Length: 161
Image (cartoon, rainbow, N blue to C red):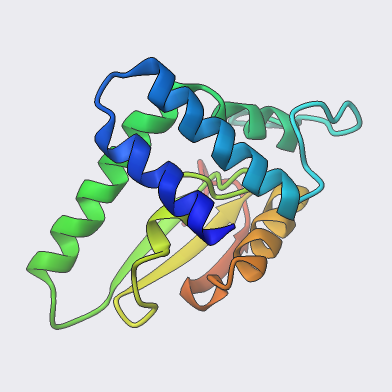
């Protein structure tokens, strides 16, 4: 599964605007994640959470975000560049990332962790939905990436301090 996720990550990072390449990559990522988590885009039993600050989408809707190819590619590339930059400019100390709104897979960072070392990077996880947060923890554990996890917050990112 790690190899499939790594291959999908590499496709997204290097395929530029090739839609077929992006589709292949996100479809592979989705297959990997749904083999590790019970959350899928077809789950009709989960619900949005309504907050004073707005609507937090359900885990299945969050899972669907992964399949939005351009969105996934743009965010994954940007996060990859940001992490690479921070690692190159702060090589003597670890960096810490807060991933707010993980959804059920932490899909925008999980593939990037594969070739990194937990001594270089710590990821704090935050989501308002306990189902998404538990699914993310399970995915990372099953992929052998839970060593990257720092703090875990069940919280509304829009009001978190």
